[in-house]
Image (cartoon, rainbow, N blue to C red):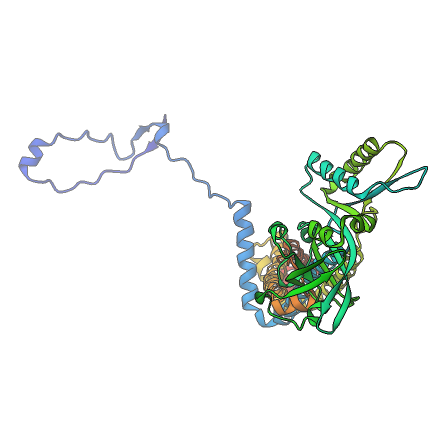
Length: 458
């Protein structure tokens, strides 16, 4: 309980008599200076002004920094243009490097297969040096493919046949493969299509020829089903279903057909006497284990006295440095140099302009701004400005890298064009923020040292 002194009660005019009669007389006050008892619970507690949270302080500083940038946009425009161009160059170089790296990877995979590609050859006797019958070798490999559930595999037979063309008979190299060879080696078909399983049921075998062969035929429309007369142990008429993309260096006429039609054309004896191999595309993490298992199974099937020949054949086979890694380092170095030049320009402009804000900073300090608040405000001006320039630069980089004309110039013929890499955007935005911190650090340190008296001098 607490005591307080009451104020005197002033008299008021009485109402109607009827109301006075009905209303009970109030209890007369004890006196003008009398004390009345009030419960403690009825006393009002003093309210405290809620202090802002850390998030609200950060948001407020960002909004304040943006207002400063908008007000002083003429002063920072040149520096922001430089940062935007540098960030755009950085993101463009990293993004274009990813596209070019994909092109280089596909070139390696076309020649040696995708990681991890295992290449096996028919084993031979260690004592007589006689090669195991290729037909038995291919049969065993087909069994092992089913046993270990390898999704992509193919037997490869290389030979040659004669083709009857308009200018006479010419020899052409022939590749007898399975349809999955196209996926394993990223076969690039410019006109028509690659071989399929359905082509094995055709009476006239389907063939895919190279661009030089297509020129010899007069580049006919494949919708007319152009044919070629082929001769070896047997004579057959093949139908052209696809044309490979032209290459910089083509050596003669080449064609590809399914394995069974190839053996029917050249004969089983010739097919087995030629160059025979077997390829398997397996997961990289299982390649070493599968190599050991297939080698063990081949020795168990043909006997311990045979010498096996199976190894990994793709461009990452030797476990060395990725052949694209040096290119990535060069691209990263160029991008870092570009960004460093932009950062130096912004630091120079920021140091010059902070000297003209001494009066403003002094007034802020006079109105109670702490050193930390002034430091953070000056720092955030540079960070917000550079991030805004970085967002614009990244947007321009995406437009440039995803332009079809630029992609054709950087990596013509790429099958799996990668999207704009997320890491390129994150690196560019992170670099722009880092540049803002670097550019705002020294001006912020100078601003903290400004005293109130300095505002009078300026």
